Length: 548
Ligand code: TEU
Image (cartoon, rainbow, N blue to C red; front, side, top):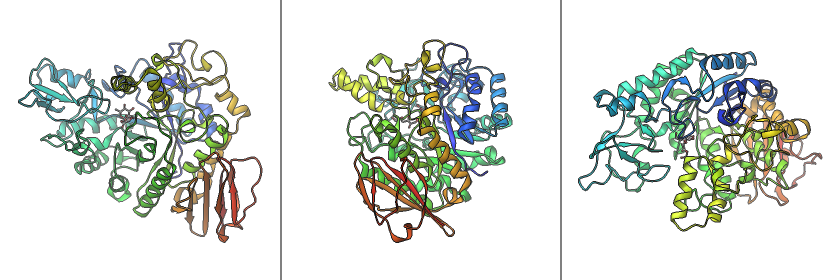
C-alpha cells in the first residue's frame, strides 16, 4: 500500500502506556495496546524518540542514536515490539533528530576534550571582539542560540534549541555519513518509516553572520544546500527500501515543500508545515491569548492544498502532535460540542489531499488538561516561556491562561485508558499529571459509548477503500465563506465535496446542482441530511457528498 493510502498514528512513548509502574510510558506498554491500535485500522506508527537521552527535551536531545533509553526499555523490547507490530500489519516510523545531538553525546564530549575531528562535528565559533556571541541568532526556546564551548573564554557552540542540544555541522561529510549510518542501522532492524526533526534547519553556511531578522531564521531555514543533503541521504539510506519519509519543516515555504516532496526529486515523501497552526498567534507571537483567525486558517488550508496538488508535492495532514495544544480545545468546542467539533476537524483533515496523522488521544477527543498549577508543566519551552512572560510583567494568572492554551504539554498528557487509578496509564503517579476530565474521556468510555473513536475508524477505512481520497486532486469550495471550510476532490469520473462548519452557529452554504444527486459518504450528526441548493449546516457539522 503506498503512503497516500496510509493513516499514520503518532505515539509519544513517555505518555502512552506504562508497563512497569515507574510512571513513565514504555515499549512494553505499547505492545500491550497493539490490539487497540490494530482495531483502529492505522497502518504505521511514528514514535517520538526513545533513544538514549538525558531527557532535557523529552528525548529530542539524543546521546546515543543506537540504543534504547532504559526509561523506555531494552533493545529486546524493541525487537519484540517491531515483530508484534508486523504481525498486525503495522509498520514502524522512527524520529531522526539530526539537526543536533545532546551535549552528552560522545561526539560532543570528545570535542570538549579537544578532539579537533569531533569539534568539526559541531558549529563552534569565536565570540565577537566586543565579547558578544558570534551572531545575533536566538534560540527557539528563548535566549541566545550560542553558549560558551566548555571552559573557553572565546569560543561558543550553536544551539537553535536548548543549550544541551548542540547543532551538528552538516557541511562536514563525516557528519552526513554518521547520519546515513544511523538510518541504515534502523532499516536493518526492520524500520520502514522516518520522520526527520527540523530537517530544513541543517543547511547552515560555513561563515555564520548576524541576521537582519534579529533572530537568525533567515540564515539557516530552508537553505538550498538542504536539498543536496536530503538527496544524498535518500541515496545512501532510506531510498534503498520502500520507505515512508516525512520532514518536519519549521518556518518553511510552499515552494520549498514542493521541492522537498516532489517524487522525481528523490528527497522526502512528504512534509509537515505549521502555518495553519499559527493562526492563533498574535503578531507571530506564540505566547499570546487570542481567538484563532478562521479566514486565515481556511485560506492557508486552501493555498497549501491547491499549490501542493498543482505542483505534485505531498502534505502530511495533521492538527495535533506532541508540540501542539489539542485541536478540539483550540479550534473546536471541547465542552458543549466536543463530539461534533472533534469529528468535524477529523473530516477536514482525513478527506483532504495528503497523508493524515493521528496523534495519540485525538481519536478519543482528548482535550487540553487545563492545569491550574504552574508546577504541573514539564516542557522546557513552556517553563522558559513562563519566565519570559513574568519578566514582561504578566501575572501568574495570565501566564497560566496562556500556558493552558499554548503549552506543548497540552499534547503530552498521559493517555487515559479507563476511569481507574491514574486513568489506567500507570500503577503509580504519572511523570506529568493527567487532564481534568480523564474519568469521563478515556479509551474505554469512547470505544464503548463514544462517537469520536468510531468516526475515526470510518475515516481510516474510507481512505483505504476509495481512491478519490488518496489520489484525487484538491480545489477550494466556497473559498471566502466566513465559517465553513469546504473543498472538492476529483478522480476520474468521481467527485467528492467536503463541507465542515468551524463555528458554533448554523451556517448556510449554496450547493451547486451537480451535488444534489450525490450520496452522503460520511456525516458527523446522527440524523440524515437532505441535500438542497441552500444547505444549512448545524454547529460543527461536517459531511461529505460523493458523486459517481
Ligand atoms: O520541533 C521543532 C519546532 O519547531 C517546535 O519545537 C517549535 O519550535 C515549537 O514547538 C514552537 O512553539 C521539533 C520537535 O518536534 C520538538 O519536540 C523538539 O523540541 C524540537 O524539534 C527540537 O528537537
